[in-house]
Length: 353
Image (cartoon, rainbow, N blue to C red; front, side, top):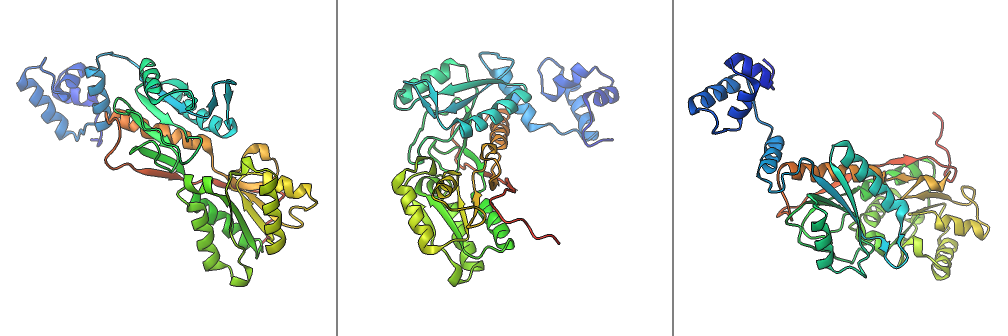
């Protein structure tokens, strides 16, 4: 007999209907105790084991006052300007949104998009709106600043956040593996013959990722690059998307002083600026974007696959929903995902074997 006998198989062995088996296995008082125990004994003999996720979800549905047949999962996005009705950084947040929405609907739940401008909405007002939408679970997108906190009353919801940093309180988190991503591109760079590898990071990105970007770079550099070829890490105060003339001047000075033959950065603004002053890639320097996106065209980079991050976040929150685990966790976990390297014309081609 299979390790997972069906209700039909149990019913056939016990000589009862499948509906009777269902009642017996959830200890329904509608059956006589003698009948219930006999069917449970038959199920055990056949190797039946209850699915704890399904049991928890069914228990929640039966006990729910609203008796909703389908749960609603909300996606909370704070990258929004109320005054201009404008979504910010939507190229990234929109990809998280897309992954969450696709996975929610694939699993048969309702999807609800919740957008808040934190300069306009108070925490109390946010809680009121979320409650009014009859939300059962929440996926929280990264906040606009790593130093910002948004700790609401999460008790009514199964909840998970996208992002390494714990600014939503003690809840489960999912993010891409910044350390492994950096290590992967450094290995590729070294295999392509680059000897003076430079990394441009920033305080915001480092705090968001638990300083794993720079940790991976410095560890690899100290282990694999001779001191004569080590280029000082350049840590900027602003994210690359916010660079202006002072930041670009600082990068130019760093480049001229240390002469890296490869530059690793997050986006493509650094590359475009260096090209604007007459430098060429890959002729003068190779270039790798650590947060690669299709809009960058032929730039080499690392695709963090934001859509998959969103989908995995949904899987985590649905698992908690099925277990009827809501609110903050005494022992929150962090799930890290691996992306993939994308070839581009800004990097020397791999040697043919």
